[in-house]
Image (cartoon, rainbow, N blue to C red):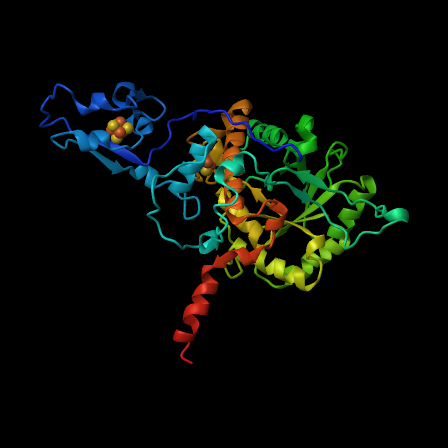
Length: 460
Ligand code: SF4
Ligand code: SF4
């Protein structure tokens, strides 16, 4: 059995106090001055440890409090209350909600899967990936202990084309020429960042984390050229042409933007370095002609089709507002109809905010998934988009130290990897490559709604 892929995590504190979900409101008026005040009974020592932070110009109690409600319930005069922090409620947007941001911060800090308490109080359906329910009917087999212990569940995937058939030589040996391929132990590729105070330190942290995790990072070609020590794990994004200043040697993968002369650009690259895995980045849309373009790019010889939605998870403006999951499903079905699905590596990205989104995107039909904003969140990003408006980043992302950023990204991926194992174990799938297009193991809310109610309300 091959050696198990394991991600070593190390607790790495935030640089700035985390914006907590709730705040303590502590009234002094009416206090009985009990001999044994509940504040001295806090098992986390919150009231002793609280201080004034010059980073946030405020009390650190909300950062320290674990919300156990012991002091709230214990005060005989009911002078201690907890309230939802309005600053926390204002974090992020519809996709990167306060809950998603907090959960990613916590994973980047601890490397552990966040535990949100008993039961789930939220809705069972929502937009995008929230309208998918995975079939967890195998949840008792293998056991949870087995997932992290005896059982072998592989999260390895390949980036590259596959031949439609093998040519066998004398004695049954494989005579087909091997096609260029990059094998990664996680179905996650670090993608270009859609916003942020993107200093060289940020890119260095991402490059070094990709190397430590043995996955790939797509990054602007000038940063990839600068970070030559990690070149094996970097895929320079070059736009439409290969810059003369970029030597291709040392890289295993490169990414080109889809354009009219994409065939000629590929031919130039392959003439220079035939064994390079060449990915083409194509804007995902609900336009059915996307399928023909993917097939055409494949016929040119591209090794990976990077099908990229916006960072919101939706298609570019000017289309119908389709979500990435629906665009992957459409592309997957179209490629099956063209009988080329197994030959093409489809890397999907845009709007991947949580570990479960990776698995769900693969179930829809992706071979691997690109991750962007969560890398920023690992480095403390609040998804406030001040940087997009040209204003100062409240957490000075650009000033991180690369080793700190590396630990945070590795922690996040360590927690995500464990969630991949949990989901795959519960689905009885031991091979991440088998997730691709396994739509029989998913229920889509839209399908259920149509099957259940269409006849009732269609008027027929
Ligand atoms: S709610 Fe719990 S953790 Fe928070 S201050 Fe009170 S006793 Fe401490
Ligand atoms: S915290 Fe805000 S300003 Fe800083 S990188 Fe994130 S979105 Fe941009």
